[in-house]
Image: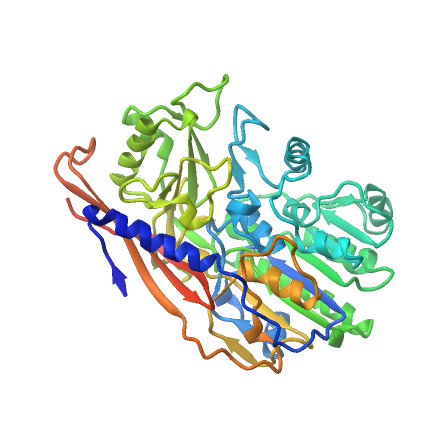
Length: 539
């Protein structure tokens, strides 16, 4: 179903989007009728950047075996922007980015860094953010924090710094045991010495575009740190393992390249290490394992420079301020397949001019603004309306064309053409991997109902028999539970469009119509973004 509204009916668009937003904030699916959880342990394994269409017996024999004895979530959704830190926090908390306060990998937060963007996962950012907010850098508790507070043992191990967002507490009580390894650092800090004595120092990854390779050494080190050290005294109640591949080699090459396939196989090997360790300890049949990716992946077909574009049309935009900014100045923050524009002082004239330029560009996809300006969607529609949100956030355009290795999904981005990237509202970035198996999971099941990364934390909390005191925004994936009736409800897919007729454009001198769309699917009171793009128009 396609809904298209001309500008005189913009209020109708607003009301419809409010309905969509309301549906997606409904209470999680009631799981009281599901059988009592049986697993003694729950493990979340993240393959950074793994596309589900690369799962097969050749690339991923261990994941394929897990899929065959468990559930494959064939319609899973990453959260937009489809990037690591956004979805790392979504996976950790089960709440919307606007509520967790992490809406991009890089954001402009002047209270932390007044001259330029910060990395939202960086330890110095996290510590400063907690200092400024009284410990509320994240706006919601994570699964690991909830479990630790309830007296359950936890272990987090990540090759990438994003693992810190799962359990960032610097001070930790000796009991219950709750430990974390993130990019070669540990909490508590005293844990690092015995790990490095046994495994050597954490091996740095050297990104070499001339000889692209997976992060084999870093992933192996992190996996061994988990199973040999963090699990030394037994498998904890809840564990997380975050692997950096195939993300690293896909950024240096593209999805489907030999290096990218090697990265996929590398993560599969480490999954095999986890499964073998559980089997050796006699714990495999007592463990629910979830394998998820933070996002999908695309290939850059064309490189653009939006900042030059704005400046060429007399709007001063920069990526770094050389002095404390003045009202009306603009900072552009790139996050791969999306970009954020911060207008100092929220000057409405500057914001409107930027939107006008984007709607006349050949690179902008769906545009989201604070106030749902004509032809845009509101930030709240995408649940990226955090307290310090940008004035404009947009996705770059995409198509379903294939790259040199036959992998579909092409995008426009600020990075070099031909390389892999993500972050857009392309269906190839949005649709990502989720597989689960264990005593609580339905065996041999292909789950075609819409699901999302935002549902992982509520489902794991249910299996741990815990609740989030402030609630979650995702749902419990009861359809994947063993001995649970399948839902009879049918998902509802809709397409919503926003249009704006431009009559005084700086580029198109004649009348020009901008159109963008979002395709959503609603199920069990929750709405998932399937894709979104600009609609090509003549002028």
